[in-house]
Each structure stands twice: as C-alpha cells, then as structure tokens.
Image (cartoon, rainbow, N blue to C red; front, top):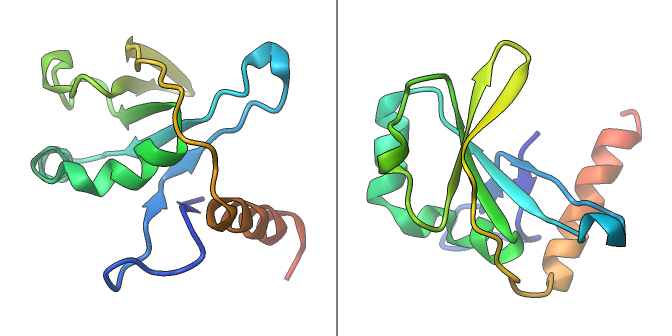
Length: 125
C-alpha cells in the first residue's frame, strides 16, 4: 500500500511512497527504507528525469530503493543516492545497495500519516 509522506497536499498532489518499512528495534538501527516500484521502462525513465519526485521519500527515509522486474534497468542507471532490488519470483534480490543516510527526524505530519496508514490497514472498514 502506498504511504503518504504527510497529511496534506503539496502543489495540489499528495506525496506518496510505494512502500515504506520502519525497523522498530534499536538492534535493527531504526532503519527506514522507502521503495519506489517500477514495472515499466518508461515509468523508470520518467522518475530519473524528475528527481524531485523522490525528494519527499528521501526526506523521511534513510535508504531509498527502486524495485523492478529483472533486467528492467541497468545498475549503472541507478542514481548515487538510491539502491535497486529486483523481484525474482517471491524474492527480492539486492542489486545495488542503497547508501545509508542519517536522514531528518520524522515530522509530526509524517507521523500522523504513518499512524493513519496503520489504522487503515488494521481496522476493518
């Protein structure tokens, strides 16, 4: 499920992350990777040409990954601040390790959006 990066809209459009993971234990370093899923070459190229689209995800995460089918992109096309996973069957294969960034502390807008997302997933309609 997509994860909003805040509670409102920026420039008329919500900023969303395709997937987000929060490691909740100190032993896991409280890692916060964000994932942008790309299933077509055209979609990936649009993303590369418009790097500000991933700015919100980079702001709230400390690692950022593209997730694609095998062979959709070359590892040399992955921006320096990003990593790459390829989906092979039911497994993710890490092709490029995303650099770890300290990142900014989560804002209250992001925390509220995260809580809303959890509530939406956990509480039946």
